[in-house]
Length: 380
Image 1: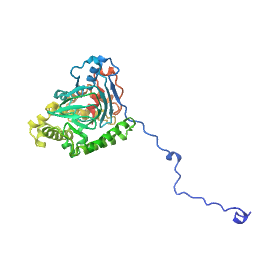
Image 2: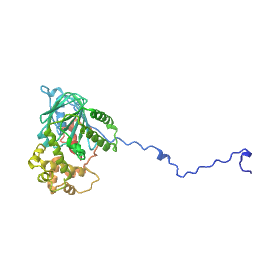
Image 3: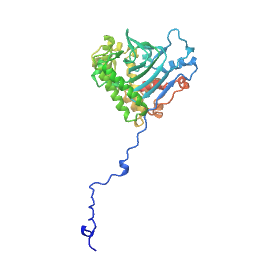
Image 4: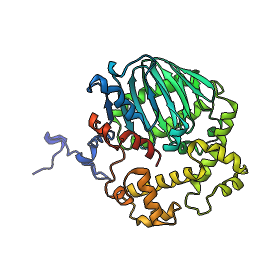
């Protein structure tokens, strides 16, 4: 038989392309399945309680942070319909809140009993607030962003309001010079703040869909946005003395955090290394229960983080020694007093960092306050 050719009416065979690389499988070309949401909100509401119990329940829930009072002439029996939803991003807490008119105080006594010192950023969606620090009053409202320190006493009052709040540990700002420019009880309302408000609103809308890889990036971006705003020359400031004190306290806190495991971490060492007098040092931390009290708090929180880390297989004594405790018995007593459970229990019942649950009225009566626990462990 003659080979195929144009003359016999047949076309020549088509050359076969030889691939240099194997064809990608259909499986490899398929998109990876989306990651599940990483956050479950911690919700609390007084609306399902009897009217006469609502205000007391709200007081108890926020007790780790502030003391709440009703406006003059208001009655407990009239009801206090309030809602609080918290999201834990690991390095930052986000809180959505709706609350009737009230007054609030974070006193020196409150700081001694719970010496958290995070920065609190507040964006009011509706209503007004007036907050006083060291005799200086700042007014918050829609279109403004408030910034205050939880490591300094304050008091104030608010009308019926809805707000979006952010709690950020000071450690987020230790690597920037802007931390020394932070002035307590600031209110911002410039061009940068409009950008920040837009960003915070978009962040809020995505909380329910964020995945685990999103969380550290979101925390870092929020921190960077705040640093930009803090570097802006606009905005009102608190008293100059308070500003100076906060800058010095930041230096002390940074030094303490970097030297937690040292047996030489004492008021004398801090004073010598930072070039300040013991008297000034004690004055700075008087409202926090004293310098030694603050150092022990930081050591206990660092130990708690290590104990809660399921990957960390160090012995409890090794962890205690690493954060500066020389006595196992002293560490166990101090840890149990601070957290309400033993170091061994902290290791055995460690919970996922970003998961929460709905809080019922029964939970409020319990000795454990989940929102307070989140505040205490933030940044650790």
